[in-house]
Image (cartoon, helix red, strand yellow):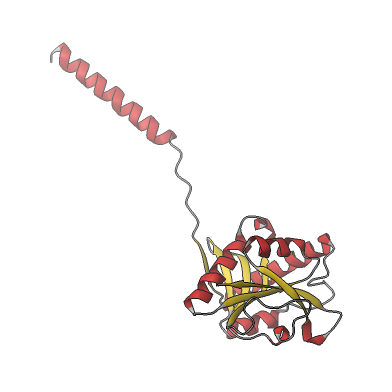
Length: 206
């Protein structure tokens, strides 16, 4: 065997060794988690109630009298009714439920009378968003925005005129989110005509 062949064999061997070292040391790409907003299933209810607990803790921490801990709302039965009505949706992130919202294609009786303002689309067909919350580990990571975007697409697909949402006046984060998402602050409503349960209402024309 000539010297030239030996040199070629040595170079090939070195190349193979270097390639193997590169492959071994190369970090595998992280697996991208699937994320999707989908209709909720019965198995999601336990995770949803954990998210509600997170939300109640946050409201208490922020001094917001929305979803107080001494009140049952929103309860397991509320979400079960949403589920049965096919109006309950979750943000599924890698098979982990990190957000929830009831997206309802029906008139809300609480929106019949509005005070100190008027609706953007007074006589239109609208979608409502209720009981929206995010898992605490995912606060400020776009979960609520994604749920709102889904609701907007849903409203357009169903040829609706607008989306209406209500929230507590002291819920600064929700009020800010709605305004940043293009909703117009319309006025005040009273839940079940109870003057002690006022809510700020917003509407977005789609």
